[in-house]
Length: 183
Image 1 (cartoon, rainbow, N blue to C red):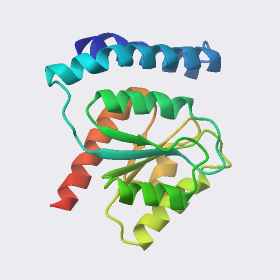
Image 2: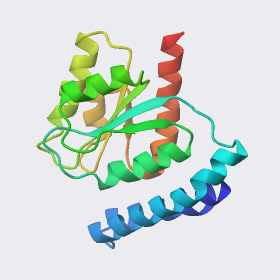
Image 3: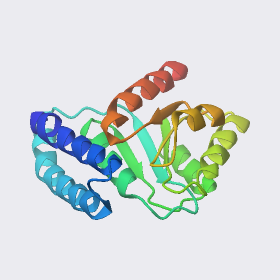
Image 4: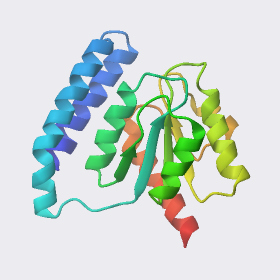
C-alpha cells in the first residue's frame, strides 16, 4: 500500500496538475492510467494476501449518458479500489435507469458520476433528482473536467471531486455520510 500511496498517487496527481496547466495532454493521461492499472494488477494480490485491503463500502461509478470519455473515471476507479472500496464500474454513456439498477443490485452506498462534456453534465442532475424523488438510500458524488463545486451544490450532489487527487478524501467523507444515514 505504501508504494501506491507514496509513489503512484502523487505521480498521477502531478500529471493531473500538468494536464490542468496544459503541459500534458490526453495521450499522457491514457498512458498513465494504463501504467497505473498494470501496477495495481501487480500490487493487488499482495494487498489481498497481506490483509491490508479492507472493504470500506460499495460505489457504483459511471460516466453519464451521452458522454463517451472515461479516462478520469478509470483512474478514479483504480484509486478507489486500492483504497479499499468495492467499485462497480459501469463504463461510459450510462443511462440513469442502468445506474440506479446497478446501485440497487450491488447494495451501493455511493453513486459516483463523471462527465467530461458540458452537454452531458445535466445527466448528473437527472440522477440526483431521481435518487431524491424515489427516496433512495444512495449518496451521489460528481466530478469531471467540466464539473465545478458550484455545479455540484446547485444539483444537490453530496460530494464533489475536483480531480483524481482528492477522490479518496471526498469519497471517505461521502461514505461517512452514507454509512451514518444507514444506521
